[in-house]
Image (cartoon, rainbow, N blue to C red; front, side, top):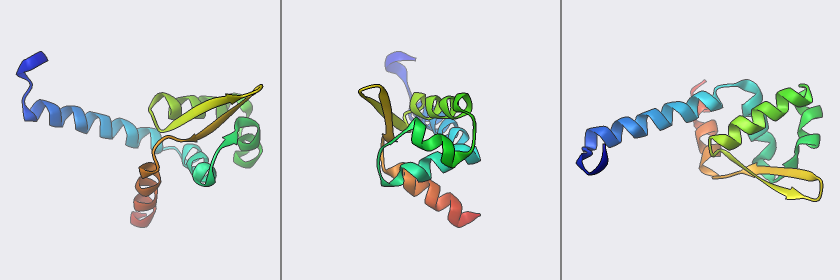
Length: 100
């Protein structure tokens, strides 16, 4: 598209990005992870027993959330700690719960 992008093109990109984020947030287990991280960082080892899913399943959810910019991670020794990348995601979740 380059230099000749129109507002319509940009709007389509924004719509596609919005749909992608909502799709990622559309899984109950990923919403649980978001709620767990509301108060700060947690290690996967702390998330697994609360979510009640296997390690590979929780790992896939965390990776998907991170790949889509919803979470960020950092190493702390051998542990990987996850946190919400942008607190506005909490507002999205709150608004969706309000509509339910």
